[in-house]
Length: 386
Image (cartoon, rainbow, N blue to C red):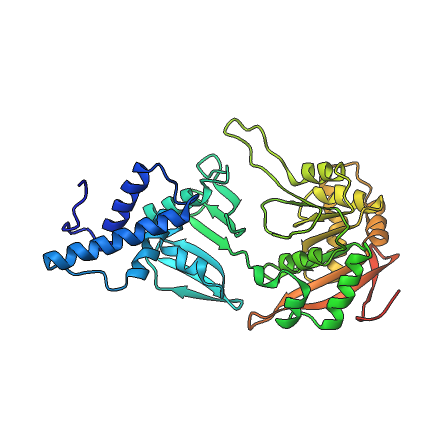
């Protein structure tokens, strides 16, 4: 026996090592065969207790809890796993190994968890293992999707001062349709019906708001409301929308390799998506020169849906008209502004209040005219028609 249960190693660590040995012997991967891993772990916890009772040692009182802890070490994300499993927690972030925070109900709180730098690095490496992405001195930032759809962002020194900064924005399937958002109080039933009708009719909708205002959640719910016969192509930097549809293709960008090749940008994805016969193009977030290709798609009659950071719905249109200028010097600002004014049908602006509540604050529609240098808009009242 390579590991004696009588050793001073904590029970969970001793059991975990025994489980690792058995999994290696059976050439089994706990991430691919979680049932086998759970069965072996339960066997080893009982075996540990039998040994402890026979030798007068302290047994594991909470066998189920020990099994969960061991499985978290083997195939989950260790000490962070309970927070990732908690459906009331929206986001987890680490500013340092001893400064761990969560967001619950839109409000942040610090949790009593102390890790080490080595544990944080090991957790990040485990999270990135199946993504094909990396973080190192040459690539000090990384965005990736975890197996459950949650988004991981990491920044490391010397970009950060001393410690690795880790953010995990959890994927929540609870609000993936408009009906659930109505129940949560994010929008009224009349507004939800109006937006669903707009999606089924093939109208183009821009969702705006600040960070954590609920833009991506609303966009996913809008996509879920699209007509079942529509072919939908989604493009994102990292998979976040998590939507399903009968005819859907989801694509995400790719980081450059160690040699600096193989990068796939969001702008490239938008261009490729237009070659895939979409009835609706969905862009997870418009933030750079890909806005030009999105506006050109809108101008040629392809219905689109996207999110954009902005302080109000009218400002979202101004920003969408300004971002294409990042694509090059020869872009005509007058053409872009007019194209945005004629092609975007609705702008839905999301806000998060001081209590953490996320809601739809306003909906506007462009009139097609330009007022000064910006598209003219009018406020939409649910139930009204053009």
